[in-house]
Image (cartoon, rainbow, N blue to C red; front, side, top):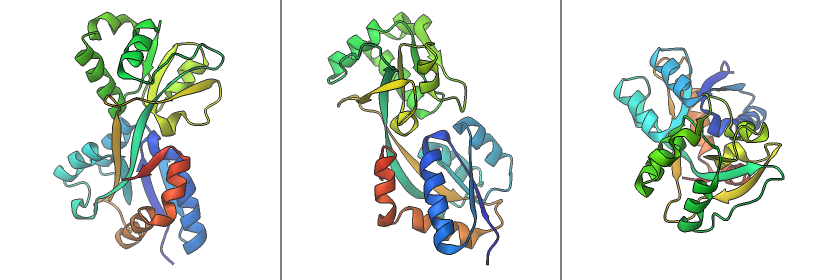
Length: 229
């Protein structure tokens, strides 16, 4: 029996990979441990050649690792497509975000807006700039620290409106989901997985990746607010 598989992921896929890793271990007898940290930290640690067998990050971050020779680019697979959602503190008024115009008004009416350090945060700031309100909002923006859920800032009353991957907001206490962002301003991120070149279990890593993109995992992805990519 192979040694356990050790991976690292960003917070967006933490719950999904914990569930699917446990299912895979039960099916195969191969232990799976996926460490979840902020995406910036995950990228840094794989770049530093920590001995992970697998890494799961936004596709553009994995591309950087591939360029640096830190992952096996030929074995990189798209894991899920994840949309960004909005939320407010529990019990707060629920602004309309059903259209681009309504979402813009909700943003302009928010006293404090929380967003993440991940790709969703970058895309959100680009959207505000495209709307021409980036400077107007500058003193109302609150960026969560790496690995800190935006929902926790909402639950503590530190922000009145928050944006993050739907998978990171689902089932968090103290908040109310408003839903994913409307078209044409929806923000979607592909999260992918790849074997690390510093890993010690390449065959086991490839087998786990094969399982994670199989149809048997589609229902779990849906429950965690994501979809097959």
